[in-house]
Length: 317
Ligand code: CO
Ligand code: CO
Image (tube, rainbow, N blue to C red):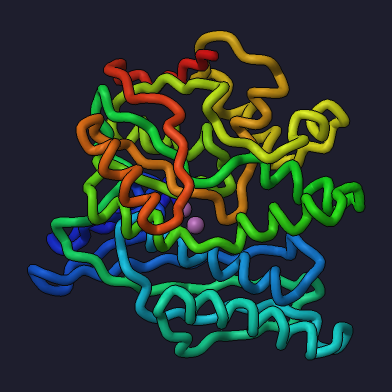
């Protein structure tokens, strides 16, 4: 999309040039639209769970902007003549449940016959134009907070290869299907400088987008980064998705400090329906964690923003 001409409009608050999670367009002085679309190929075997995870993933881009989802539309690719329609009904039911949990309304959708099933949603939300939380805005001294563990891409690759065992399958599915709603409401209530959700470009990629948009750098504390159990064992067995390796190849040049190859792959791991990554002014940190506790949200302080505009990511222990 970098090759496309950029629209400029006085009411366009967030367009595509900062790689933000959603577009934001002002309708009135006190109301802006938040619009996003996302669809995925199956990452779990259970069709209901696939639908729920895909919907949570699509809704997340509205939450990452501090918005509230209002309506959603299904986007479906399905091998209509080859796979029983009951499977598609289960996928849609999973998606519907998440839209309902988000307090939004499903208003339609579109299906195409396709050998490879895909499911996702376009989601429209609302936000006050002055309370949009974008990629840009992170300031030196801000603490970085993450709300879900990483390693989803590695675990779902193990799952696809038939290697992952039931307790771990349930755990990674539960985390992916968890809405970022409560985490977003907490950050909106307390106020943060910048936020994004961690998805296909991994923690490193989405952090880098935030740093680039904000013209700052960051320090990550490796020990504090939440990760799924057993993730380094899978990496050592070479169970790593291609997307994760590609992420690392494009982001490696920004890394500073000491880290092992396994740690770098974890940091670059492509997530599905990952958590929110927030740049939090230090004097708001306690209140944010209180707001998390009040809503039953987990959060981890994983590092901080530093001054250097060269968007470096320094890894410390
Ligand atoms: Co996003
Ligand atoms: Co997205």
